[in-house]
Structure formats: structure tokens, C-alpha cells
Length: 219
Image (cartoon, rainbow, N blue to C red; front, side):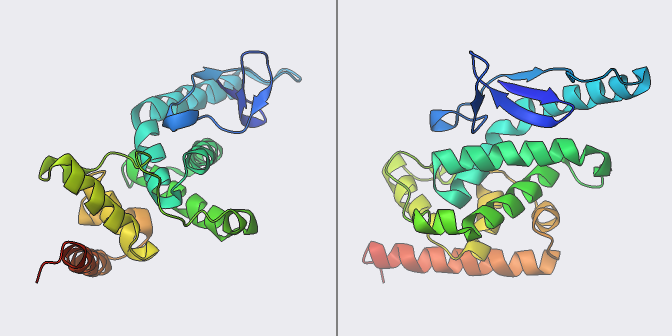
């Protein structure tokens, strides 16, 4: 479970031991369990405020946790890493909740945090050493919108093509296909103008179509 204490968010196991991620194998989230601060008592107003933040975070995790994990998985190509990114995303959301002013949808804000967190992790020496840019293993990719108009086998192959796109093109296309974000929402999540989003999506689609034709020997 995730413990929300005065020191932040941590994952606690059944025996009280800390775990590295709130997401278990296969992206299954563990339960959110708010807890109070073990130190000195704080003023009632502060306690009420913290309780409200914990409740709000729990709601966000219930509503958007799977989507954040799926997006993190598509970017990192690793269940374990996606779990770490998703956990860190909600930790940052908790820490900076006061900065969220509802100019953008909660999901868009969380995707922006997840994207920046994934980029940071992917740049680190640890992830480079462990070849986290390798192809996704069969059966490990998250569900995608392509399956709605292609049979399962073709959808799986097409998704692999999408996942192999350059990062800047892939991240925009995944937000559109997997999460149904509008051009404006994608722009808000990635810090881009609508025009730039349109351009990246267009380039991404052309690259996917070209690679798809090449793999299937189509003219």
C-alpha cells in the first residue's frame, strides 16, 4: 500500500517493509492507504488540509492510475520502470498539489508530470546500462486504440512500430491513440503549441505508415 505521511508518499508492504513501487508486476496498483504523521501534533487546520490532500490524491490514483501507468509503460518499455515512474508521478502530484489550479484537466497535468519523470529516468546512467530502450517483450505492451480497427495480430505489430518511433513523435501519438487527448490537451501535457502537436502527429503517422508498408511489402 501507499502511505501518505507528513514526509510524503511511501509504499509499505504487508509486514511494514518499504517497497520500491506502488505498481506490482503487470502494472497492478497496490492499495492506497493514507496515514498520519508520527511526529508532533500539528494544528487542526493543517491536519484537515493534509487529510484533504490525501483524499484527493487517492481519488486521482483510483481514477487515473492505470492511465498514468500505461503511458509510463509505453515510454519506458518496462513494467518495473513504469511502476517507478507512475509512483514518482503521484508523489510529485502530492507534493505540488497546491500548484494545480485546474487550468488543465487533472489527467493532462499528471501525464505532463509522468512524461518529465520518464525523460529524467531514461537519461540516467542506470537505465542506459540496462538497455531500457530495447523492444517491448511480447505481451508486455499496454492496450491501444489501434485494436478498435485492426485485428489483434495486426494491432500488436502496428503498436510495435509506434513504440519504435523517435521519442518526440511517439509521446504525442500515444497520448492521442491510447488516451484520447485532444490537440490542446496534448500540447498542455507536453508544453507545446497546437501547431507543433499537429506537425508531430502528422510526421508520426507518416513514419508509421511508411514502416508498416515496408514490413508488409506493400507499395
